[in-house]
Image 1: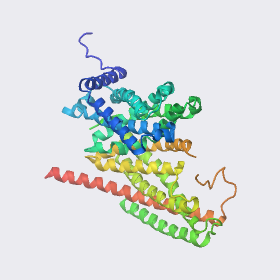
Image 2: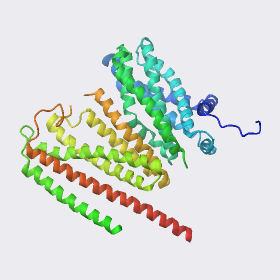
Image 3: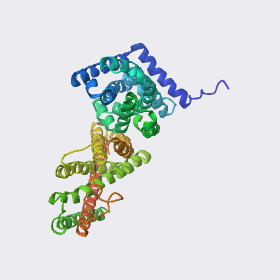
Image 4: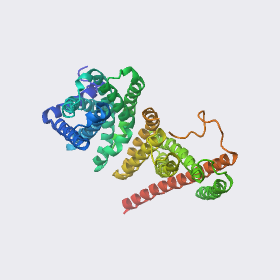
Length: 236
Length: 230
């Protein structure tokens, strides 16, 4: 059977290969990590200037910090999502990726996985920075945050990958990413801010069951919609 | 064929104009003035039909967008273009007429209540779809991208509503379990006729816009054929 054509890789191995490729490029260049972490730091500093350094003490950590963290994550994420597809533009690499004998959904899954890893790396820098710069004891809320934050990061990575792909097809479309993505991310954003506030204020997570259920459902929906629609985005 | 669609369009135009005149007559001359709010309540007869039809346009958008992605037939894309543009227009009017009523009634132009916020988010989503189509390099790409965004927007709207509802809970409920006293008969008639008039206007605008999109496609095909034969 050695003369038979090699079987194309299955969905899981194809998506893992794509994620591995993106992360390897990132490991060699460190472009996205540097750009997003620095950008996140800049946004944090701007927030501190805008609200005053002692805003957290005046208004309470639960009011200010979740908004600051998620706005920072969304904006820095957008910097990263744009880069995720710019990688493929060089030497028309996207054509090669699209021509690969694998399900186009696997391309989405791989890219979303890589974006999830990069966002998680960004978060591991952002939360300690927020804790230090805004003087909030986030370490005390580490356990609930460790559940809440990845749940919402999955959704953010999926939406970012989906919309990143859409704008990468449009000429000069990168300026549109935030405009298109953020309104669609409304439920994700409301849930993220609410659950993060609960985690910081020490409210038991059981009180937010409906939000956690919503975000779990959203994660599944975003993945399904992206898998269905990705084919149409990558065409041409 | 062409003749009969022209005839239908003219009939629709006459029906729209006639029902619009009837609605104005009922709203301003027949329906009694509301006891507490006075004349400002009249905007309700415009606001409610516009809002209901805006959400109807989302269903049409979903049909057109999903239908295009599934079958790749241009007719679905024409429906998707028309419902996105006319839906966006109606959505804009909802967002303008609402605050005109809200300021005297609630004391504020805007509140982050679920129906208002969802309408605003829908407006942004529709604006994004129109913008993305304008950025596309070919009409075919525009159709595909707009369809993808259309499906996402239509699926997103109910979830946005639920999420904002949990986030904030002040919109008047006129019908349904929260309300016991019915509308005065004159008011109900004015609302229903106004609803019909705006529905006809919506159908007319969607039909005209979809026909225009079909004509644009035909023109592009003719130009391409002419360029090839030269």
